Image (cartoon, each protein chain N blue to C red):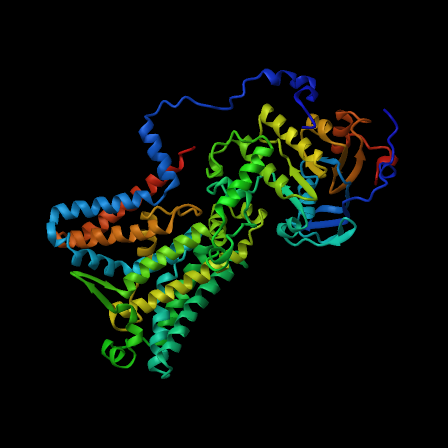
Length: 270
Length: 357
């Protein structure tokens, strides 16, 4: 095995998203135990870890779905505090949750604009609060087109009529359309077939090509090693180490995250 | 595109030649049935509308002009106005996957507050009415806070509120009825919704007009405003709605408060309908409103259905009640048929839901 190197020395730039000492307890369970996290501009950072390692809690803490008990979060060097997903979204952080967070009975356009609906200008919008459906549908269509997802025939069809892959596509398109600073993807390929997973991985690299950094949580080692620039290994509620996928094999990563092997000193606490 | 197919890992290199079709199935069912299912899926209020028109047609054929007259048809509207208004409130709650058992009690307490404030304390009528409306909204707010903040199940919260509000109603009113004559001479504004408009043989009351306007306004709000979309999203999948940035607690609270306010309006309309203020009125409103909602095609699991369906549901019950009475049938037949309708409506709802694309 090659000697691991300290990753921080590679980065002259400051992290865009930086978490320090996050702690989250649920009753007597400590889901996050003084956990650190860094995401650098333009990179894809994979987060891996065994079930129950606290990956989801970490993601929820940085996307505003959970409020950590302790610790600080910095976005572009500024300290931020998110008390709801809406707070994070206002700062340009979009998250695609594992359960996709969509309302099955509502249309694709309604779902894309959930919580940030556009209203018509003038009297209809300001007094009667009427939604600007044509504008929202045109925008949704354009964004799905951009990501090559126009196999969907009708932007007004309810989300429940879409296949799993299409739903994932809509969720990623929603994040890509509104995420101006960071996009977080929680297990984006877990429920998908081989071909659909490939499409989502392509979507990820398209988003990266636009310069938006991505946090990718996944169990799928081939996907992680293919897509990621760096791999954050999560174990027992904190970051165990950060790996460069070029220097380590998949079996090393699995060994670290299950505790079968301890990483070398330098890789720890990067 | 940063990553083309040629960059994909070796083990997936055959993907390029794999067929693009994903899970397409032979459609071996009759095209019409499937289209119907799909249409109903997109327009959930179609079923009750069809049932309503059919039942009007059938009773019209059986009873002729006795039923099929402007007078009889508008009589149905007058008979369902209270249930119709209450059912609109119930629909909002059920759309958020809740249920409100306290609607009837809230209505009666609000009407009692309007009456007693006027007659016991001598407060000017308009102010008493505003107090009654606020009282209804307060009842809704208590339920709403318990559901959204304390996170108690709506069934339990409103079961408790039903008893609390009803007991408050009897304690406060001392079980006194305010007579219609007194109201007519001293506080006729309380009977505002009983005012009649006659067009030919058709008789409408302001209460009927209010019920229809309320349904239309709510239908607009639910379909064309962000608030309405959020109500559906909360009922559909609360956690998903929360994660996509809907303030679910606030939406639920607003729905319960609005529903309480609508119940208070129903209380005001009730005075118009009865002429008097009676603390023992409207005991069946809970079940009747839920019946209208279910027959109207709103799913008890939340997130699906339309408020116009509820209006049709209330009218269906009204048509059956009047039609069977005019035919001289035992009133039990009405209940029996309504029972059949309820089960039928839910069965149709389940069938429609299986529709895709």
